[in-house]
Length: 283
Length: 319
View 1 (spheres, each protein chain N blue to C red):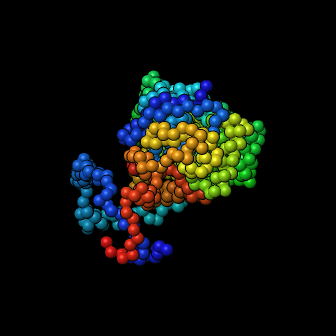
View 2 (view 1 turned 120 degrees about the horizontal axis):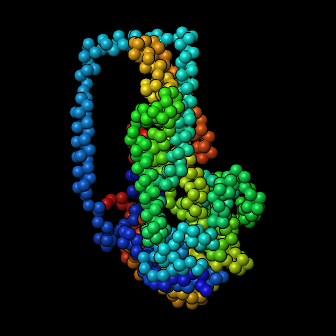
View 3 (view 1 turned 60 degrees about the vertical axis):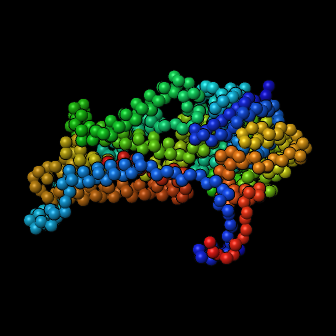
C-alpha cells in the first residue's frame, strides 16, 4: 500500500492564493523521491499538507494509512506525526532549549506529558542513550548541553536530523534541506538521507532546488508546476524536460520567497526585462 | 564593488535599470476610511475624558494652593523614626511582603492552567472541519468561558474582592491574599494566554510535527520561547501586588495600609512619611530581584522569540 497517496488535491488559501491545483501522486514505502519545481509551484504546500499542518481544500489525501482529507482527531494526528520526521531549511529547533532537549522532542509523540516534563530534570536512561547516539551520529556530541540557538544553521539542521532518528520514523520529509547549506555539508546530508533510506528503509521525500543533487540522489523525481504534477519519472528521463520554463512563475505566489533582486534577475533571465548597468547616476 | 560609504556614491556606482512599464505592480492598498473614523473617535474620547475629569493647569498656579502644598510637605518631615514605630513598620512591611508574595504565587498557580484554555489555537488542524463540530465547540466554549472569567476577575478591583473576602475569611491578611490572588489571576491569565499565542507558529509546528500534544507543545515550545517575557510580566505583577497589598490595608485586610490609614486619619504625617519610605524600599527590592532573575535568563542569550508585546498587554497591566 502506498505510504503517500493524493488524489486531485487542491489547496486554496483563505486569501485566494492557489497552493495546489489538482495534484495526484502515489509514493510507495522505501522510495527516495525528489520534488522539484520553482518557488510557488506548491512544493512547500504539499509538504505541510503531508504532515497534517495544512488541509486540502478539495481532493483526497492519505499518509501512512491516515486519511487527512476530512476530520482528524488530535490523537490520530499525533500518531501520524510520530511516524514522520521533518527536516526543514529553517525553524528546525527551539532556540532556547539545549541540543539534548531538542532531540528529546522526537520522543514526545510516544511519551506521556508527565514523564516528558520529568525529562527537564532527569532524562530517562534509555532516552538519554538513544538521544546521545543520534547526536553523536550527526557529529554534535560535544554540543550536547549547548543551547540550540548558539549553533549555526547547518548544525541546527543536524539537530533536526538527530530528532528524526529519535522519532524512529517511517517517513522523512525534508523541505529544501540543502538550500542554506554549503556544498560539502549538502553532500554529507544527502548521503545520510540515502543511508537512512537504504539501511533503515525510511521513505524519504525531499524538496530540492538543485537539479544536479536531485538527479544524483533520487531514483524518482517529481516536478510540480503551478500546483500540478508536471513530471514523474526517473532522473534519466528528465534530460529533455524543461523544468524551469516560463509557465512556472504563473502562480500569484511566484516570487514570494525570493528576495526582490533575485526575483528581478529571475524574470530578467526569461528575457522579460531589460537590465543594464548604469554609471551615470541620473534618473 | 558597491561603495556603501554614502548614499550618494551608492546610487552612482551600480544601478539596475528596470522598465517599470512592463511590470504589473499590485494596486496600492486603498485608503481605509474606517481608520480615519477610529482616529476621530479616539481624539473625541480623549477630549471628552479630559473635559469630564476637569483637567486644567490653573490649580497649580493658584497661590493659595501652593501655600497649602508647602504646609503639607513641611508636615511630612521629619519622618517618625522612633524605635517603637519603626518596629511596628518593620512588622507591617514584612506582612505586606508576605501578602504580596503568596498572593502572586497563588495567582500564578491559578492563571497558568487557565491560560492554556484561554489561548486561541492557530493552525488548520484546529479548525472546525478538522476537529469535528463537537470537539471544536467544546474548545470554543472553554475558550470564551475562560476569557470571561479573566475579565470578571480583572474588572473587579482588589478592594472590592477584599470586601468580599472579608465576609468569607474575616478581617486580616488572609482576606488581602484572597483579593490579590483573584484579581492577579485574571490579569496574569490574560497575559500568559496572549504571550503564548504570540509565539512563532512555525516553531510550534516543528514541535507538533514530532507528534507532541498541545500540553507538550506548551512546555517544549511556548514556555521556553517566552520565558523572559513571562518572567518580567510576572515580576511586574508582583510589584503591583505590593502596592495593592498596601491599599488593601485600608479595608483592614492587613499590611502597611491599615497603619497608613490610621496615621493619615490622625494627621500624623511624620508616620505617613516613614510608611511611604518603607513602601518605596519594598518596591525597589522587587525591582532588584526581578532584574537579577531576568539577567540570569537573558545573559545566556539575547534572543527573545516573543514578538514585541501587543498593545493590549501593555493596556492590561497599566490599568
